[in-house]
Image 1 (cartoon, rainbow, N blue to C red):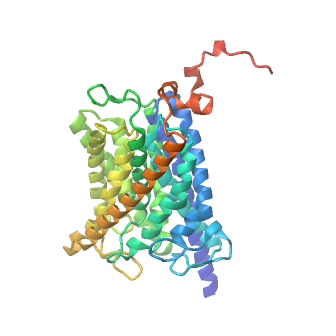
Image 2: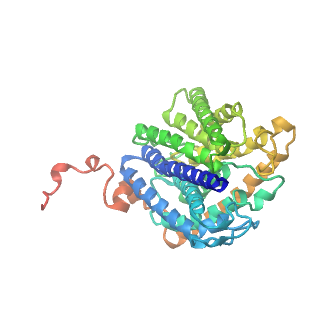
Image 3: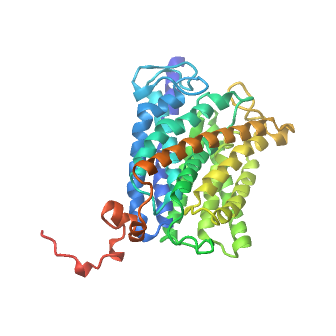
Length: 439
């Protein structure tokens, strides 16, 4: 009977992991809507091709080597087994799923794949409306095959940063997923430069409005829904009903983020800017991702509120010098840093410090800066490595193939230049000028 119960529990846990993984995959639709909403109409269709290509590239690269490098053993630097996910093969000891690859292992593989794909999706928010399509598959292979697996191994896979102090805390990926993606986006942005017309002759930023704030709002709500897979799914099981607590913590933070962003936007810009309020939700969700499994309910609104406040300030400051159309550097990068550091402040003795939980309780419980220092060290290492590898990759693409479309192509729009059709053809093509169908 015990064996049967264990089998049922294992199957239930695997089902939970797959269901939450599907929710995380649906976040790709959220990213598509957010980026289309912030794009002008002539570039909206290009986002669809980009999202589809990048999820596909990530899937194949993660299967070939990304998963193995991230989770194939407990060595400090990189994993060593599990390439091409050969069923029945043995993962090196020290892996979070050490043993033979089976159905449960396939579930874990899929769940971690969609995390990788979300991180890759974050990269491109900084590059809208001027990057060449060729950059997507090339960087996607490098990112999903090498860059992301490095950071995932160091924090999620028992590697380098898991061995610093009592271990770096990042329950679901404020650093692994969000800071990593934003850092890759920063490297691309520095090599791309701003969109044509973004800055005037004196270097002052001009607003380039996106074509659909309703579409952006739908995207934010899809992402909010997807986060209920992202954070609660990282329990990797249903035992003890811990996932339900993580759901509540996640939602409380997101709600407070919206309020914080609204307050900051009204105070600083005298307007309840829709984009700022939406990014307040995203920033809070990013921030709560790292501490969601480690903090009590009371801490979640504080973490989310601070994220909502700082994302508005960050967007306004960054916009003075860098053209980040969707605010990815702020919502995923700056908020990711805050969320990771917040573990060192708010992690609860009830939820951390045991034999099977990484890290120590936070400053507000212990009076010690030790865990906060571990968190800051991990952030620094991850940022430096991801930025260096990403910058080298994008610089190579720029040298060999070109990274940016020409000014004339940018003026025409990526839809027609890269894909030969418009996302909204009725805006650009007079239907009375079209030739009759040969059918």
